[in-house]
Image (cartoon, rainbow, N blue to C red; front, side, top):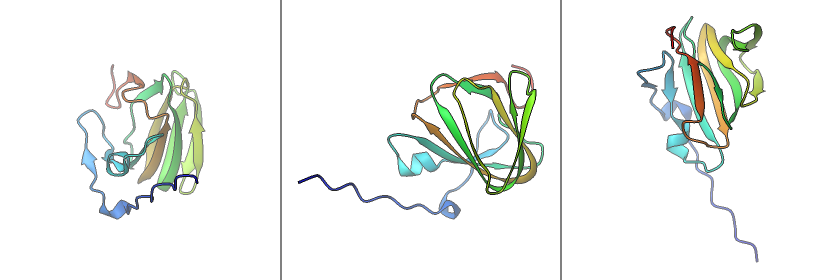
Length: 132
């Protein structure tokens, strides 16, 4: 007889406190820390207008972006030469080697899932505040 799967853990995003991180403007809701999944790294980022993530790519981890609220521009390529507009309900997946930077147009939240759950896999090309 097959072993039954573990009962899933439930979490309401409203119960997760957003944290400020020194190197990022957006605030982080550490969903992955709370749920402890084994095959992915989920998080929710909260943005104010003009806030952005660091320009980066990953060595192994692809990322799924799901816009929960607000409007964003996903800048793709070394210098952000390609842009994708994202609004509430939009979902996209970015390959590990693709350089990306998410910029907030209207305040909102983005649910980001990285897989596999490789720690410190990101390579930062430019910090959100400018410079390297």
